[in-house]
Image 1 (cartoon, rainbow, N blue to C red):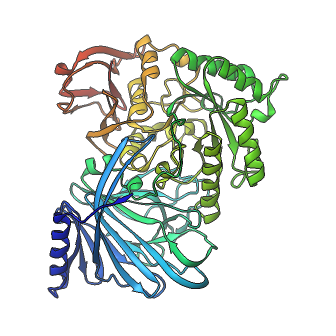
Image 2 (image 1 turned 90 degrees about the vertical axis):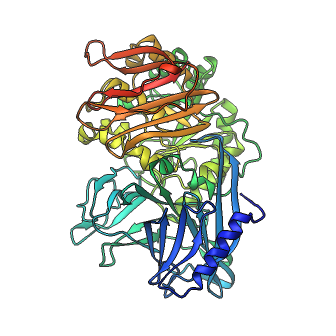
Image 3 (image 1 turned 30 degrees about the vertical axis):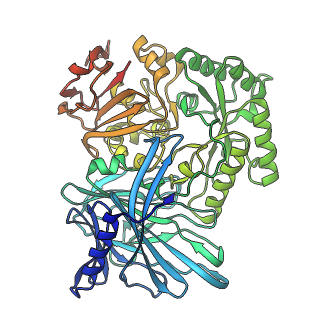
Length: 625
Protein backbone atom coordinates (compact mmCIF):
# COMPACT_ATOMS: atom_id res chain seq x y z
CA UNK A 1 0.00 0.00 0.00
CA UNK A 2 1.31 3.42 -0.95
CA UNK A 3 0.99 6.52 1.22
CA UNK A 4 0.69 9.74 -0.74
CA UNK A 5 0.75 13.43 0.07
CA UNK A 6 -2.36 14.84 1.69
CA UNK A 7 -4.81 16.14 -0.90
CA UNK A 8 -6.62 19.46 -0.49
CA UNK A 9 -9.94 17.61 -0.13
CA UNK A 10 -8.57 15.31 2.55
CA UNK A 11 -6.98 18.19 4.44
CA UNK A 12 -10.23 20.13 4.29
CA UNK A 13 -12.14 17.11 5.61
CA UNK A 14 -9.67 16.76 8.46
CA UNK A 15 -9.93 20.43 9.38
CA UNK A 16 -13.73 20.23 9.34
CA UNK A 17 -13.59 17.12 11.51
CA UNK A 18 -11.31 18.80 14.06
CA UNK A 19 -13.56 21.86 14.09
CA UNK A 20 -16.66 19.81 14.75
CA UNK A 21 -14.84 17.79 17.41
CA UNK A 22 -14.12 21.00 19.31
CA UNK A 23 -17.73 22.14 19.47
CA UNK A 24 -18.45 20.32 22.73
CA UNK A 25 -21.74 18.75 21.66
CA UNK A 26 -22.74 15.22 22.71
CA UNK A 27 -22.58 14.23 19.04
CA UNK A 28 -19.54 15.42 17.12
CA UNK A 29 -17.95 14.42 13.87
CA UNK A 30 -14.38 13.21 14.36
CA UNK A 31 -13.53 11.51 11.04
CA UNK A 32 -14.73 11.46 7.44
CA UNK A 33 -13.92 9.67 4.19
CA UNK A 34 -12.24 11.53 1.30
CA UNK A 35 -15.51 11.75 -0.64
CA UNK A 36 -17.58 12.55 2.46
CA UNK A 37 -19.97 9.60 2.09
CA UNK A 38 -18.77 7.83 5.26
CA UNK A 39 -18.33 9.75 8.51
CA UNK A 40 -17.64 8.90 12.13
CA UNK A 41 -19.19 10.68 15.10
CA UNK A 42 -18.43 10.50 18.81
CA UNK A 43 -21.77 9.95 20.51
CA UNK A 44 -22.30 9.07 24.17
CA UNK A 45 -18.90 7.38 24.45
CA UNK A 46 -19.38 5.35 21.26
CA UNK A 47 -18.32 5.68 17.62
CA UNK A 48 -21.32 6.18 15.37
CA UNK A 49 -20.49 5.47 11.71
CA UNK A 50 -22.81 7.03 9.15
CA UNK A 51 -23.31 6.59 5.43
CA UNK A 52 -24.77 9.67 3.72
CA UNK A 53 -26.03 10.85 7.12
CA UNK A 54 -27.78 7.51 7.78
CA UNK A 55 -26.74 5.57 10.87
CA UNK A 56 -24.86 2.48 9.74
CA UNK A 57 -22.70 1.05 12.52
CA UNK A 58 -22.28 1.62 16.23
CA UNK A 59 -18.84 0.74 17.60
CA UNK A 60 -19.67 0.46 21.28
CA UNK A 61 -16.16 -0.07 22.62
CA UNK A 62 -12.54 -0.06 21.52
CA UNK A 63 -9.37 -0.94 23.40
CA UNK A 64 -8.12 -3.57 25.79
CA UNK A 65 -8.83 -4.70 29.33
CA UNK A 66 -10.17 -1.60 31.13
CA UNK A 67 -9.84 0.76 28.13
CA UNK A 68 -13.43 0.91 26.98
CA UNK A 69 -14.03 4.50 25.88
CA UNK A 70 -14.03 5.74 22.27
CA UNK A 71 -11.60 8.68 22.27
CA UNK A 72 -11.26 11.48 19.74
CA UNK A 73 -9.35 10.65 16.58
CA UNK A 74 -6.55 12.81 15.18
CA UNK A 75 -6.04 13.09 11.42
CA UNK A 76 -2.70 11.63 10.26
CA UNK A 77 -2.69 11.40 6.46
CA UNK A 78 -4.54 10.47 3.32
CA UNK A 79 -3.95 6.87 2.23
CA UNK A 80 -4.36 5.40 -1.24
CA UNK A 81 -4.50 1.71 -2.07
CA UNK A 82 -3.40 1.05 -5.66
CA UNK A 83 -2.41 -2.51 -6.60
CA UNK A 84 -3.04 -5.37 -9.00
CA UNK A 85 -4.47 -8.81 -8.29
CA UNK A 86 -3.68 -12.09 -10.03
CA UNK A 87 -7.19 -13.35 -9.30
CA UNK A 88 -10.30 -11.85 -7.80
CA UNK A 89 -13.22 -9.65 -8.73
CA UNK A 90 -11.04 -6.83 -10.08
CA UNK A 91 -7.51 -6.93 -11.52
CA UNK A 92 -6.66 -3.29 -10.71
CA UNK A 93 -7.88 -2.17 -7.30
CA UNK A 94 -7.89 1.37 -5.94
CA UNK A 95 -9.37 2.97 -2.85
CA UNK A 96 -8.87 6.09 -0.77
CA UNK A 97 -9.06 6.73 2.95
CA UNK A 98 -8.32 9.31 5.56
CA UNK A 99 -6.25 7.81 8.37
CA UNK A 100 -6.66 8.87 11.99
CA UNK A 101 -4.85 7.82 15.12
CA UNK A 102 -5.15 8.11 18.86
CA UNK A 103 -3.13 6.84 21.82
CA UNK A 104 -5.09 4.57 24.14
CA UNK A 105 -2.18 4.43 26.59
CA UNK A 106 1.58 4.81 26.54
CA UNK A 107 2.06 1.61 24.56
CA UNK A 108 -1.18 1.20 22.56
CA UNK A 109 -2.46 3.16 19.57
CA UNK A 110 -5.76 2.91 17.73
CA UNK A 111 -5.32 3.35 13.96
CA UNK A 112 -8.60 4.22 12.24
CA UNK A 113 -9.19 4.57 8.49
CA UNK A 114 -12.34 5.96 6.93
CA UNK A 115 -12.66 4.75 3.34
CA UNK A 116 -15.14 5.86 0.72
CA UNK A 117 -16.92 2.52 1.21
CA UNK A 118 -16.34 1.66 4.86
CA UNK A 119 -14.08 1.81 7.87
CA UNK A 120 -11.15 -0.27 9.07
CA UNK A 121 -9.35 -0.04 12.39
CA UNK A 122 -6.62 -1.93 14.18
CA UNK A 123 -4.44 -1.67 17.27
CA UNK A 124 -0.69 -1.23 17.45
CA UNK A 125 1.37 -2.05 20.52
CA UNK A 126 4.78 -0.39 20.55
CA UNK A 127 7.80 -0.12 22.83
CA UNK A 128 6.73 -3.18 24.82
CA UNK A 129 9.80 -3.76 26.98
CA UNK A 130 9.28 -7.34 28.14
CA UNK A 131 7.36 -10.23 26.59
CA UNK A 132 3.74 -10.16 27.68
CA UNK A 133 0.52 -11.94 26.84
CA UNK A 134 -1.77 -10.13 24.42
CA UNK A 135 -4.32 -8.20 26.50
CA UNK A 136 -8.04 -8.94 26.24
CA UNK A 137 -9.61 -6.98 23.39
CA UNK A 138 -12.85 -5.15 24.20
CA UNK A 139 -13.89 -4.10 20.69
CA UNK A 140 -17.65 -4.47 20.30
CA UNK A 141 -20.45 -3.52 17.92
CA UNK A 142 -24.00 -2.69 18.97
CA UNK A 143 -26.60 -4.31 16.71
CA UNK A 144 -30.15 -3.57 17.77
CA UNK A 145 -32.83 -6.23 17.82
CA UNK A 146 -35.09 -5.66 14.81
CA UNK A 147 -32.14 -4.96 12.51
CA UNK A 148 -32.35 -7.01 9.30
CA UNK A 149 -29.36 -9.33 9.12
CA UNK A 150 -27.87 -12.32 7.35
CA UNK A 151 -25.58 -13.94 9.94
CA UNK A 152 -23.99 -17.37 9.96
CA UNK A 153 -23.51 -19.37 13.13
CA UNK A 154 -19.80 -19.97 13.61
CA UNK A 155 -18.19 -23.33 12.96
CA UNK A 156 -14.54 -23.99 12.27
CA UNK A 157 -15.09 -24.85 8.59
CA UNK A 158 -17.39 -21.84 7.94
CA UNK A 159 -19.92 -24.15 6.25
CA UNK A 160 -23.31 -22.81 7.20
CA UNK A 161 -26.28 -20.77 6.02
CA UNK A 162 -26.54 -16.96 6.25
CA UNK A 163 -29.99 -17.04 7.80
CA UNK A 164 -32.21 -14.01 7.10
CA UNK A 165 -33.49 -12.67 10.41
CA UNK A 166 -34.20 -9.59 12.52
CA UNK A 167 -33.12 -11.05 15.85
CA UNK A 168 -30.07 -12.55 17.50
CA UNK A 169 -32.23 -15.30 18.95
CA UNK A 170 -31.41 -18.24 16.70
CA UNK A 171 -31.39 -21.84 17.85
CA UNK A 172 -28.12 -23.63 17.12
CA UNK A 173 -28.18 -25.44 13.77
CA UNK A 174 -26.03 -28.16 12.26
CA UNK A 175 -22.29 -27.57 12.17
CA UNK A 176 -19.18 -29.70 12.37
CA UNK A 177 -18.12 -28.11 15.64
CA UNK A 178 -17.91 -24.84 17.47
CA UNK A 179 -21.52 -23.67 17.75
CA UNK A 180 -21.85 -22.07 21.18
CA UNK A 181 -25.15 -21.68 22.97
CA UNK A 182 -26.23 -19.52 25.90
CA UNK A 183 -29.75 -19.48 27.33
CA UNK A 184 -30.79 -21.67 24.41
CA UNK A 185 -29.56 -19.26 21.71
CA UNK A 186 -26.50 -19.30 19.49
CA UNK A 187 -24.00 -16.73 20.71
CA UNK A 188 -21.01 -17.12 18.35
CA UNK A 189 -21.20 -15.69 14.83
CA UNK A 190 -18.94 -16.00 11.82
CA UNK A 191 -17.60 -13.39 9.44
CA UNK A 192 -18.70 -11.97 7.14
CA UNK A 193 -21.82 -10.68 8.87
CA UNK A 194 -24.25 -8.64 6.73
CA UNK A 195 -26.91 -6.32 8.10
CA UNK A 196 -29.26 -3.60 6.86
CA UNK A 197 -29.51 -1.12 9.76
CA UNK A 198 -31.40 1.44 7.67
CA UNK A 199 -33.46 0.80 4.53
CA UNK A 200 -31.01 0.70 1.62
CA UNK A 201 -27.90 1.02 3.84
CA UNK A 202 -25.83 -2.14 4.41
CA UNK A 203 -22.86 -3.09 6.56
CA UNK A 204 -20.68 -6.18 6.08
CA UNK A 205 -18.43 -6.96 9.07
CA UNK A 206 -15.22 -8.94 8.65
CA UNK A 207 -11.46 -8.62 9.17
CA UNK A 208 -8.24 -8.61 7.16
CA UNK A 209 -4.45 -8.81 7.25
CA UNK A 210 -4.08 -11.67 9.70
CA UNK A 211 -0.36 -12.24 10.28
CA UNK A 212 1.43 -15.36 11.50
CA UNK A 213 1.46 -14.06 15.10
CA UNK A 214 -2.28 -13.26 15.05
CA UNK A 215 -5.32 -15.38 15.61
CA UNK A 216 -8.50 -14.69 13.70
CA UNK A 217 -11.59 -13.36 15.43
CA UNK A 218 -15.34 -13.73 15.27
CA UNK A 219 -18.37 -12.15 16.96
CA UNK A 220 -19.77 -13.19 20.36
CA UNK A 221 -22.92 -11.86 22.00
CA UNK A 222 -22.72 -13.85 25.24
CA UNK A 223 -22.21 -10.96 27.67
CA UNK A 224 -25.83 -10.82 28.84
CA UNK A 225 -26.83 -8.14 26.33
CA UNK A 226 -27.62 -9.87 23.02
CA UNK A 227 -27.32 -6.52 21.18
CA UNK A 228 -23.59 -6.25 22.01
CA UNK A 229 -21.33 -8.28 19.70
CA UNK A 230 -17.76 -8.57 20.95
CA UNK A 231 -14.85 -9.02 18.55
CA UNK A 232 -13.08 -11.94 20.21
CA UNK A 233 -9.82 -13.31 18.78
CA UNK A 234 -9.35 -17.06 18.99
CA UNK A 235 -6.65 -18.72 21.06
CA UNK A 236 -3.26 -17.02 20.78
CA UNK A 237 -0.46 -17.87 23.18
CA UNK A 238 2.00 -15.51 21.45
CA UNK A 239 3.86 -13.22 23.82
CA UNK A 240 4.54 -9.81 22.36
CA UNK A 241 7.45 -7.43 22.79
CA UNK A 242 8.59 -4.43 20.82
CA UNK A 243 5.83 -3.83 18.25
CA UNK A 244 2.68 -5.86 17.51
CA UNK A 245 -0.25 -5.21 15.14
CA UNK A 246 -3.69 -6.76 15.36
CA UNK A 247 -5.62 -7.57 12.18
CA UNK A 248 -7.85 -4.86 10.72
CA UNK A 249 -11.45 -4.88 11.96
CA UNK A 250 -13.34 -4.08 8.75
CA UNK A 251 -16.83 -2.79 8.01
CA UNK A 252 -17.82 -2.40 4.35
CA UNK A 253 -20.59 0.20 4.24
CA UNK A 254 -22.93 1.52 1.56
CA UNK A 255 -25.63 0.33 -0.81
CA UNK A 256 -25.69 -3.22 -2.15
CA UNK A 257 -23.49 -2.27 -5.11
CA UNK A 258 -20.90 -0.90 -2.66
CA UNK A 259 -20.96 -4.20 -0.78
CA UNK A 260 -20.83 -6.57 -3.76
CA UNK A 261 -18.20 -4.62 -5.70
CA UNK A 262 -15.96 -3.84 -2.71
CA UNK A 263 -12.30 -4.83 -2.51
CA UNK A 264 -11.85 -3.36 0.98
CA UNK A 265 -10.68 -6.68 2.45
CA UNK A 266 -7.67 -6.76 0.13
CA UNK A 267 -7.29 -2.95 0.13
CA UNK A 268 -6.12 -3.08 3.75
CA UNK A 269 -4.15 -6.33 3.46
CA UNK A 270 -0.36 -6.44 3.20
CA UNK A 271 0.94 -6.06 -0.33
CA UNK A 272 2.16 -9.00 -2.41
CA UNK A 273 5.07 -10.83 -0.78
CA UNK A 274 6.06 -12.85 -3.88
CA UNK A 275 8.82 -11.65 -6.19
CA UNK A 276 7.35 -13.42 -9.22
CA UNK A 277 3.69 -14.10 -9.92
CA UNK A 278 3.79 -14.74 -13.68
CA UNK A 279 3.54 -18.50 -13.12
CA UNK A 280 0.21 -18.23 -11.27
CA UNK A 281 -2.67 -18.98 -13.63
CA UNK A 282 -6.33 -18.99 -12.52
CA UNK A 283 -8.51 -21.48 -14.33
CA UNK A 284 -11.46 -23.88 -14.48
CA UNK A 285 -11.04 -27.37 -13.02
CA UNK A 286 -12.64 -30.79 -13.54
CA UNK A 287 -13.31 -32.39 -10.13
CA UNK A 288 -14.03 -35.96 -9.09
CA UNK A 289 -15.43 -35.93 -5.55
CA UNK A 290 -18.98 -34.64 -6.12
CA UNK A 291 -20.05 -37.47 -8.42
CA UNK A 292 -18.62 -40.31 -6.35
CA UNK A 293 -18.63 -38.96 -2.77
CA UNK A 294 -15.15 -40.39 -2.76
CA UNK A 295 -11.56 -39.48 -3.52
CA UNK A 296 -9.20 -40.37 -6.33
CA UNK A 297 -7.75 -43.81 -5.80
CA UNK A 298 -9.02 -45.14 -9.13
CA UNK A 299 -6.71 -44.38 -12.03
CA UNK A 300 -9.42 -45.02 -14.62
CA UNK A 301 -11.74 -42.46 -13.03
CA UNK A 302 -8.91 -39.93 -12.94
CA UNK A 303 -8.43 -40.55 -16.66
CA UNK A 304 -12.12 -39.81 -17.27
CA UNK A 305 -11.77 -36.40 -15.63
CA UNK A 306 -8.57 -35.61 -17.51
CA UNK A 307 -10.38 -36.52 -20.72
CA UNK A 308 -13.28 -34.30 -19.63
CA UNK A 309 -10.89 -31.38 -19.15
CA UNK A 310 -9.52 -32.02 -22.65
CA UNK A 311 -13.01 -32.12 -24.19
CA UNK A 312 -14.16 -28.92 -22.46
CA UNK A 313 -10.80 -27.18 -22.97
CA UNK A 314 -10.24 -26.71 -19.24
CA UNK A 315 -6.70 -26.01 -18.02
CA UNK A 316 -6.88 -28.03 -14.76
CA UNK A 317 -7.97 -31.33 -13.24
CA UNK A 318 -8.02 -32.05 -9.49
CA UNK A 319 -6.88 -35.39 -8.11
CA UNK A 320 -8.71 -35.51 -4.77
CA UNK A 321 -8.09 -37.47 -1.56
CA UNK A 322 -6.94 -41.09 -1.29
CA UNK A 323 -4.44 -40.89 -4.14
CA UNK A 324 -1.91 -42.45 -1.78
CA UNK A 325 -4.00 -45.65 -1.98
CA UNK A 326 -4.18 -45.99 -5.78
CA UNK A 327 -5.62 -49.31 -6.97
CA UNK A 328 -4.66 -51.71 -9.76
CA UNK A 329 -0.93 -51.18 -9.43
CA UNK A 330 -1.07 -47.53 -10.50
CA UNK A 331 0.55 -44.62 -8.67
CA UNK A 332 -0.02 -40.90 -8.36
CA UNK A 333 2.89 -40.36 -10.71
CA UNK A 334 1.08 -42.41 -13.37
CA UNK A 335 -1.99 -40.18 -12.95
CA UNK A 336 0.04 -36.96 -13.05
CA UNK A 337 1.85 -38.14 -16.17
CA UNK A 338 -1.43 -38.93 -17.93
CA UNK A 339 -2.69 -35.42 -17.23
CA UNK A 340 0.52 -33.74 -18.37
CA UNK A 341 0.72 -35.89 -21.51
CA UNK A 342 -2.74 -34.57 -22.37
CA UNK A 343 -1.69 -30.96 -21.64
CA UNK A 344 -3.85 -30.74 -18.51
CA UNK A 345 -2.32 -29.28 -15.35
CA UNK A 346 -2.89 -31.57 -12.35
CA UNK A 347 -3.78 -30.35 -8.85
CA UNK A 348 -3.70 -32.76 -5.91
CA UNK A 349 -5.22 -33.00 -2.43
CA UNK A 350 -3.56 -33.17 1.01
CA UNK A 351 -4.81 -33.36 4.57
CA UNK A 352 -3.56 -30.55 6.77
CA UNK A 353 -3.48 -33.15 9.56
CA UNK A 354 -4.39 -30.62 12.23
CA UNK A 355 -8.18 -30.90 12.06
CA UNK A 356 -10.16 -34.05 11.33
CA UNK A 357 -7.63 -36.91 11.36
CA UNK A 358 -9.12 -40.15 12.73
CA UNK A 359 -11.29 -41.65 10.02
CA UNK A 360 -10.29 -39.00 7.50
CA UNK A 361 -8.78 -39.90 4.12
CA UNK A 362 -5.10 -39.48 3.31
CA UNK A 363 -2.44 -38.61 2.57
CA UNK A 364 -1.77 -37.32 6.09
CA UNK A 365 1.11 -35.78 8.03
CA UNK A 366 3.16 -34.92 4.94
CA UNK A 367 3.05 -31.13 5.33
CA UNK A 368 3.23 -30.47 9.08
CA UNK A 369 6.99 -30.41 9.62
CA UNK A 370 8.95 -27.84 7.59
CA UNK A 371 11.43 -30.42 6.33
CA UNK A 372 8.64 -32.83 5.26
CA UNK A 373 6.73 -30.03 3.59
CA UNK A 374 9.81 -28.88 1.68
CA UNK A 375 10.52 -32.41 0.48
CA UNK A 376 6.89 -32.98 -0.57
CA UNK A 377 6.53 -29.70 -2.44
CA UNK A 378 9.87 -30.16 -4.19
CA UNK A 379 8.70 -33.59 -5.37
CA UNK A 380 5.41 -32.16 -6.64
CA UNK A 381 7.23 -29.47 -8.59
CA UNK A 382 9.57 -32.09 -10.07
CA UNK A 383 6.78 -34.37 -11.37
CA UNK A 384 4.75 -31.46 -12.77
CA UNK A 385 1.94 -30.87 -10.27
CA UNK A 386 0.57 -27.33 -10.55
CA UNK A 387 -1.06 -26.86 -7.18
CA UNK A 388 -2.35 -28.31 -3.92
CA UNK A 389 -5.72 -28.48 -2.23
CA UNK A 390 -5.17 -28.67 1.54
CA UNK A 391 -8.09 -29.73 3.72
CA UNK A 392 -9.36 -30.18 7.30
CA UNK A 393 -7.94 -27.33 9.35
CA UNK A 394 -9.00 -26.82 12.96
CA UNK A 395 -10.26 -23.28 13.32
CA UNK A 396 -9.11 -19.70 13.78
CA UNK A 397 -6.40 -19.96 16.41
CA UNK A 398 -2.91 -18.59 15.92
CA UNK A 399 -1.47 -22.03 15.21
CA UNK A 400 -3.76 -22.44 12.18
CA UNK A 401 -3.05 -18.91 10.92
CA UNK A 402 0.71 -19.44 11.15
CA UNK A 403 0.46 -22.86 9.51
CA UNK A 404 -1.57 -21.50 6.58
CA UNK A 405 1.00 -18.77 5.96
CA UNK A 406 3.84 -21.31 6.15
CA UNK A 407 2.04 -23.44 3.57
CA UNK A 408 1.51 -20.48 1.23
CA UNK A 409 5.12 -19.36 1.44
CA UNK A 410 6.52 -22.85 0.96
CA UNK A 411 4.17 -23.65 -1.92
CA UNK A 412 5.12 -20.42 -3.69
CA UNK A 413 8.80 -21.40 -3.59
CA UNK A 414 7.89 -24.47 -5.64
CA UNK A 415 5.45 -22.75 -8.00
CA UNK A 416 2.39 -24.41 -6.48
CA UNK A 417 -1.01 -22.74 -6.29
CA UNK A 418 -3.06 -23.32 -3.14
CA UNK A 419 -6.71 -24.05 -2.40
CA UNK A 420 -7.59 -24.16 1.32
CA UNK A 421 -10.53 -26.41 2.26
CA UNK A 422 -12.18 -26.98 5.61
CA UNK A 423 -10.48 -23.72 6.52
CA UNK A 424 -11.14 -20.20 7.70
CA UNK A 425 -12.52 -17.50 5.41
CA UNK A 426 -10.29 -15.26 3.25
CA UNK A 427 -8.77 -12.43 5.23
CA UNK A 428 -6.76 -10.60 2.57
CA UNK A 429 -4.17 -13.32 1.87
CA UNK A 430 -5.20 -13.42 -1.80
CA UNK A 431 -3.35 -10.12 -2.22
CA UNK A 432 -0.40 -10.94 0.02
CA UNK A 433 0.13 -14.46 -1.33
CA UNK A 434 -1.43 -14.53 -4.83
CA UNK A 435 -0.76 -18.26 -5.20
CA UNK A 436 -3.78 -18.66 -2.88
CA UNK A 437 -6.33 -18.95 -5.67
CA UNK A 438 -9.25 -20.29 -3.70
CA UNK A 439 -10.69 -21.04 -0.26
CA UNK A 440 -13.72 -23.13 0.60
CA UNK A 441 -15.27 -21.78 3.83
CA UNK A 442 -18.72 -22.03 2.28
CA UNK A 443 -21.71 -24.35 2.38
CA UNK A 444 -21.30 -25.43 -1.23
CA UNK A 445 -22.51 -28.02 -3.71
CA UNK A 446 -20.56 -30.87 -2.10
CA UNK A 447 -23.30 -30.85 0.55
CA UNK A 448 -25.56 -32.61 -1.94
CA UNK A 449 -23.35 -35.56 -0.94
CA UNK A 450 -23.81 -35.29 2.79
CA UNK A 451 -27.32 -34.45 3.97
CA UNK A 452 -30.72 -33.75 2.35
CA UNK A 453 -30.83 -30.23 3.88
CA UNK A 454 -29.31 -28.49 0.87
CA UNK A 455 -31.95 -29.50 -1.69
CA UNK A 456 -34.67 -27.09 -0.58
CA UNK A 457 -32.38 -24.36 0.73
CA UNK A 458 -29.86 -24.11 -2.09
CA UNK A 459 -31.61 -21.51 -4.28
CA UNK A 460 -32.06 -18.91 -1.53
CA UNK A 461 -28.60 -19.68 -0.13
CA UNK A 462 -27.06 -19.30 -3.58
CA UNK A 463 -28.73 -15.91 -3.93
CA UNK A 464 -27.28 -14.81 -0.57
CA UNK A 465 -23.61 -15.72 -1.10
CA UNK A 466 -22.83 -12.88 -3.57
CA UNK A 467 -23.77 -10.42 -0.81
CA UNK A 468 -21.93 -12.22 2.00
CA UNK A 469 -19.21 -14.84 1.69
CA UNK A 470 -18.06 -14.13 -1.88
CA UNK A 471 -17.64 -10.41 -1.18
CA UNK A 472 -14.51 -11.05 0.90
CA UNK A 473 -12.59 -13.37 -1.45
CA UNK A 474 -12.53 -16.35 -3.78
CA UNK A 475 -15.02 -19.06 -2.89
CA UNK A 476 -14.74 -22.75 -3.78
CA UNK A 477 -18.46 -23.50 -3.92
CA UNK A 478 -17.91 -26.09 -6.72
CA UNK A 479 -20.83 -24.97 -8.92
CA UNK A 480 -22.63 -26.41 -11.91
CA UNK A 481 -24.52 -29.56 -10.89
CA UNK A 482 -26.83 -30.43 -13.78
CA UNK A 483 -27.31 -34.01 -12.58
CA UNK A 484 -27.85 -35.31 -9.04
CA UNK A 485 -25.35 -36.50 -6.50
CA UNK A 486 -26.39 -38.49 -3.40
CA UNK A 487 -29.22 -36.00 -2.72
CA UNK A 488 -31.18 -34.29 -5.51
CA UNK A 489 -31.05 -30.63 -6.52
CA UNK A 490 -34.10 -28.62 -7.63
CA UNK A 491 -32.34 -25.61 -9.13
CA UNK A 492 -32.55 -25.28 -12.90
CA UNK A 493 -29.78 -25.87 -15.44
CA UNK A 494 -29.47 -22.14 -16.16
CA UNK A 495 -29.32 -21.42 -12.42
CA UNK A 496 -26.44 -23.87 -12.08
CA UNK A 497 -24.58 -22.43 -15.08
CA UNK A 498 -25.05 -18.91 -13.73
CA UNK A 499 -23.16 -19.80 -10.54
CA UNK A 500 -19.92 -20.13 -12.53
CA UNK A 501 -20.10 -16.39 -13.29
CA UNK A 502 -21.83 -15.15 -10.14
CA UNK A 503 -19.22 -16.80 -7.91
CA UNK A 504 -15.66 -15.51 -8.12
CA UNK A 505 -13.07 -18.25 -7.69
CA UNK A 506 -9.47 -18.32 -8.91
CA UNK A 507 -9.84 -22.08 -9.36
CA UNK A 508 -13.44 -22.72 -10.44
CA UNK A 509 -14.15 -26.42 -9.84
CA UNK A 510 -17.03 -27.89 -11.86
CA UNK A 511 -19.04 -30.30 -9.74
CA UNK A 512 -20.78 -32.47 -12.30
CA UNK A 513 -19.76 -35.85 -13.73
CA UNK A 514 -18.36 -36.21 -17.28
CA UNK A 515 -21.44 -38.01 -18.63
CA UNK A 516 -23.66 -35.08 -17.64
CA UNK A 517 -21.39 -32.26 -18.77
CA UNK A 518 -20.68 -33.88 -22.12
CA UNK A 519 -24.40 -34.44 -22.70
CA UNK A 520 -25.08 -30.69 -22.60
CA UNK A 521 -25.56 -28.72 -25.84
CA UNK A 522 -22.40 -27.75 -27.71
CA UNK A 523 -22.91 -24.10 -26.77
CA UNK A 524 -22.81 -25.00 -23.07
CA UNK A 525 -19.68 -27.12 -23.50
CA UNK A 526 -18.00 -24.32 -25.45
CA UNK A 527 -18.93 -21.88 -22.68
CA UNK A 528 -16.80 -23.77 -20.13
CA UNK A 529 -13.72 -23.53 -22.33
CA UNK A 530 -14.15 -19.74 -22.53
CA UNK A 531 -15.07 -19.15 -18.88
CA UNK A 532 -12.59 -16.85 -17.06
CA UNK A 533 -11.51 -17.60 -13.50
CA UNK A 534 -10.12 -14.09 -12.85
CA UNK A 535 -11.90 -10.86 -13.64
CA UNK A 536 -10.94 -7.31 -14.55
CA UNK A 537 -14.18 -5.65 -13.50
CA UNK A 538 -17.38 -6.36 -11.58
CA UNK A 539 -20.72 -4.57 -11.68
CA UNK A 540 -23.73 -5.23 -9.47
CA UNK A 541 -26.84 -5.08 -11.65
CA UNK A 542 -29.55 -5.85 -9.13
CA UNK A 543 -30.89 -8.10 -6.41
CA UNK A 544 -31.50 -8.62 -2.71
CA UNK A 545 -30.09 -11.32 -0.41
CA UNK A 546 -31.92 -14.67 -0.68
CA UNK A 547 -34.29 -13.16 -3.26
CA UNK A 548 -32.42 -12.78 -6.56
CA UNK A 549 -29.11 -11.45 -7.84
CA UNK A 550 -27.68 -10.28 -11.17
CA UNK A 551 -23.97 -9.51 -11.55
CA UNK A 552 -21.88 -8.57 -14.59
CA UNK A 553 -18.19 -9.43 -14.78
CA UNK A 554 -15.67 -8.40 -17.40
CA UNK A 555 -12.54 -10.25 -18.51
CA UNK A 556 -10.43 -8.43 -21.08
CA UNK A 557 -12.97 -6.84 -23.40
CA UNK A 558 -15.71 -9.45 -22.85
CA UNK A 559 -18.70 -9.13 -20.55
CA UNK A 560 -20.44 -12.01 -18.78
CA UNK A 561 -23.80 -11.38 -17.06
CA UNK A 562 -25.45 -13.92 -14.77
CA UNK A 563 -28.54 -13.98 -12.60
CA UNK A 564 -30.43 -16.43 -10.41
CA UNK A 565 -33.84 -16.60 -8.78
CA UNK A 566 -33.57 -17.57 -5.11
CA UNK A 567 -37.32 -18.09 -4.68
CA UNK A 568 -39.86 -20.79 -5.49
CA UNK A 569 -41.89 -18.43 -7.68
CA UNK A 570 -41.50 -17.51 -11.34
CA UNK A 571 -40.54 -13.88 -11.71
CA UNK A 572 -39.58 -11.26 -14.25
CA UNK A 573 -36.90 -8.78 -13.24
CA UNK A 574 -35.68 -5.59 -14.88
CA UNK A 575 -32.00 -5.57 -15.88
CA UNK A 576 -30.13 -2.44 -16.93
CA UNK A 577 -27.27 -3.47 -19.20
CA UNK A 578 -26.75 -0.07 -20.82
CA UNK A 579 -23.07 -0.14 -19.82
CA UNK A 580 -22.57 -2.84 -22.50
CA UNK A 581 -22.44 -0.99 -25.82
CA UNK A 582 -21.15 -3.49 -28.39
CA UNK A 583 -20.45 -7.17 -29.01
CA UNK A 584 -22.29 -10.38 -29.86
CA UNK A 585 -23.62 -12.56 -27.07
CA UNK A 586 -25.02 -16.00 -26.35
CA UNK A 587 -27.86 -16.12 -23.83
CA UNK A 588 -28.46 -19.28 -21.81
CA UNK A 589 -31.86 -19.53 -20.13
CA UNK A 590 -34.38 -22.15 -19.01
CA UNK A 591 -36.94 -23.40 -21.53
CA UNK A 592 -39.30 -24.81 -18.92
CA UNK A 593 -39.37 -28.10 -20.85
CA UNK A 594 -37.98 -30.99 -18.82
CA UNK A 595 -37.07 -32.96 -21.95
CA UNK A 596 -35.20 -30.04 -23.53
CA UNK A 597 -34.34 -27.71 -20.62
CA UNK A 598 -32.15 -25.15 -22.39
CA UNK A 599 -33.21 -22.01 -24.24
CA UNK A 600 -30.08 -20.77 -26.03
CA UNK A 601 -30.20 -17.71 -28.27
CA UNK A 602 -27.83 -15.25 -29.94
CA UNK A 603 -28.21 -11.54 -29.30
CA UNK A 604 -26.35 -8.35 -30.19
CA UNK A 605 -25.49 -5.66 -27.66
CA UNK A 606 -28.16 -3.27 -28.92
CA UNK A 607 -30.79 -5.96 -28.35
CA UNK A 608 -29.79 -7.11 -24.88
CA UNK A 609 -32.90 -7.70 -22.76
CA UNK A 610 -34.37 -4.99 -20.56
CA UNK A 611 -35.97 -7.63 -18.38
CA UNK A 612 -35.49 -11.35 -17.85
CA UNK A 613 -38.06 -13.95 -16.86
CA UNK A 614 -36.73 -16.62 -14.52
CA UNK A 615 -38.34 -19.90 -13.54
CA UNK A 616 -38.67 -20.83 -9.86
CA UNK A 617 -35.06 -21.40 -8.72
CA UNK A 618 -34.03 -20.58 -12.29
CA UNK A 619 -31.41 -18.35 -13.81
CA UNK A 620 -29.65 -17.08 -16.91
CA UNK A 621 -26.25 -16.27 -18.38
CA UNK A 622 -25.36 -13.77 -21.11
CA UNK A 623 -21.84 -14.41 -22.41
CA UNK A 624 -19.97 -12.33 -24.95
CA UNK A 625 -18.65 -14.36 -27.87
